[in-house]
Each structure stands twice: as structure tokens, then as C-alpha cells.
Image (cartoon, rainbow, N blue to C red):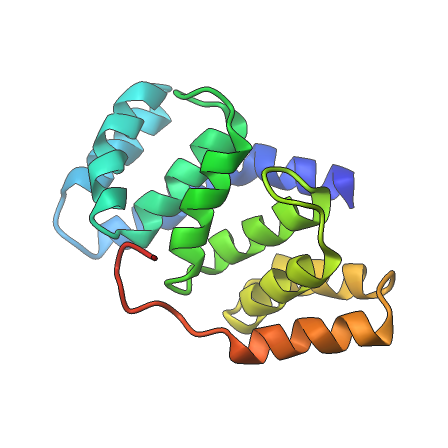
Length: 169
């Protein structure tokens, strides 16, 4: 699973661009689109400058994008703790890509203690929100978990609720 997750994170930039372009395509041009343009041109610092205030204001897409930037060290120093922070804020608003990314971090123990139960929970939430990779990872991690661990993860999934605070807190 390590190689699959590493490949996922390395290719996530493409997913960000297409996801944001699809979202922005339905709205008027604005800061999110400017960040996408900067990102596409390799101006990661510019993308960061644009997405940071949006993320602080509660934009889940910008929060997720900052999480990826911190995970990859693009335009910012690599910092798994900051990646967790931004992924968590987006995930708590129901962003399935951020939920899957948190599952990866818990599975690998990057920025958080390694925890298969939490990894399963985040993969499960991602799958529930339509993320096929979340489903695949949930099924893969389940093979190494006990029945009690899976039951606990499913209990956590059932108890999870999205936040009402747009900042994902």
C-alpha cells in the first residue's frame, strides 16, 4: 500500500487541478482560479498566497490544496503536521479527497501516530462520499485488521458528523 499511497500523493496535483478547474468552471473567475493558474505554471508560492486566505475563510478546496502542498513540500517546507491540519479542516466539511488523504497519513503514521482504526475510518468516510480510492484502501487495510478494530472504526464512522464551521474546526 505504501507505493500506491506514494503514487497517489505524487499524482494528486493533477487531481487538484482538474477538481478545482471543474469547480471553478461553474463559477465566475476568482481567487480559486488564480491559484489554479499559478499552480499550473509552477508558481507554488503564488498559489499558496492565493489559497491561504481562502483556506482561513473556510474554503474546503483551498484547505485540501494547502494540505497537499505541505505534504509534498511545494511552495512551503514539507510539514506533515500542517498537512494534517489542512486535510482535517477540509475533511471535516466532507471533502472526500481530504478524508482519503487523512487515511493515508494515519496508515503511514506521517504527522499523526500510525493508527489502522483511524485510517479505516477516514478511508470509509471517503468511500461513503464517493471516492473509489478510499473504498479500495478501506478494503485493503481491513485485511490486516481484527474484527474488533473494524467494528471500532465503523463505530467512529457512524459517529462522525461534518462541522458547521466552514473553517473545518
